[in-house]
Length: 437
Ligand SMILES: C[S@@+](CC[C@H](N)C(=O)[O-])C[C@H]1O[C@@H](n2cnc3c(N)ncnc32)[C@H](O)[C@@H]1O
Image 1 (cartoon, rainbow, N blue to C red):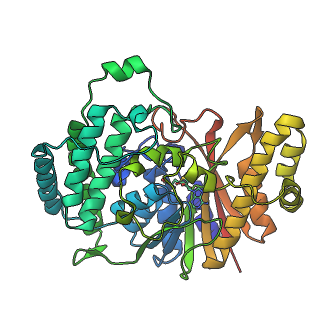
Image 2 (image 1 turned 120 degrees about the vertical axis):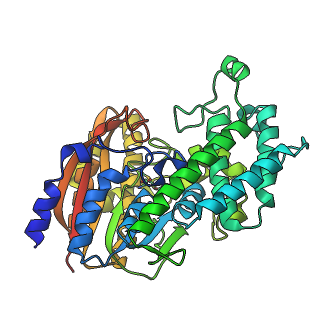
Image 3 (image 1 turned 90 degrees about the vertical axis):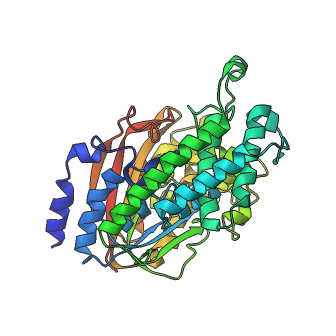
């Protein structure tokens, strides 16, 4: 049975793995353009095969949930799903993507919110933070404030969450920050001055698009019998937490599917910086009251708390411990001296945190569970950090064996989300481990 499963997974076509047949809107993927999203149709055949192997009785965890595309794909197969992330924007987005909404209730709420916005003559700016005038023109601030007030008037929290996500995407599209990079980088002044953009118009069209995407996804769940009495039939947990410290549940799982960061957020994908402007406009009490970081303090706050972001221990102690687990990492780091060595130390810190996070996950994984990791390599000091090999070595050291692995091309034109940072490679590995004890 194990051999059949392996053959089945290894036979998944390269077109599927490369995401050539994917649709941008599959599974509400496009409701907010979160960085480095997985493409559901790439993961789906693997998740489907493992669902059968686990007798369709699956509890799925993603400890680096991001835009929750893994959870959403798991829900299509009727799984219990649990996701955790350190970024409050990931939590909000995932709450919305895993909630049940009636199309009619969203259409009614949309009409109400738009009419409140249009009837609002106030020019009070609702939000203030350092450099707000750098990141938003006064006109956009006034428009966003009208939208903010209209959303706050909504009584139902689930409905407010839906519109906060619409507002987040509106902010991404109408702020002075460039959309071409996840780091905060202002557009040229001439462009800002000549740009014809309206936050209210953008909000109106994003809202309509999101209503369609969410309703389409919910109809898929209804058709497959996973929604009964307006409720998903299995459990859904979306949790704010630092995976490097703990997995915030007592539950256990037989499937883990994740795509972790490739390196520390400051030098790879700055998920936190990407989220900084939208989060200024979304009240924390409408996201989750367990969030325990002061994420609005600086644009770096979230990224500094993410994997590889904190300097807690001396590098010598870390090296001693991690080099023993990964010869590939040791070989990579020790080839450098001086400044280059300093840069490579960030890789060691990141891998140490990743290793530590895996130690938090494994006790939650049952005997005979599968762990599916999508990870790519990256360049540091013009040399390749072989994240895939390093990950395999970390798991081997913990006594968890490789089941099989697959490779996929990242087609940059079609998947700007994954390839928008220049120092990563054009290929990713999907590595599947099996925990047998
Ligand atoms: C590649 S993304 C996940 C993408 C996701 N699989 C998807 O399909 O959208 C990696 C995620 O790891 C999160 N992350 C980084 N460090 C973390 C930590 N210490 N604890 C929890 N999440 C963390 C980031 O916020 C980011 O959302």
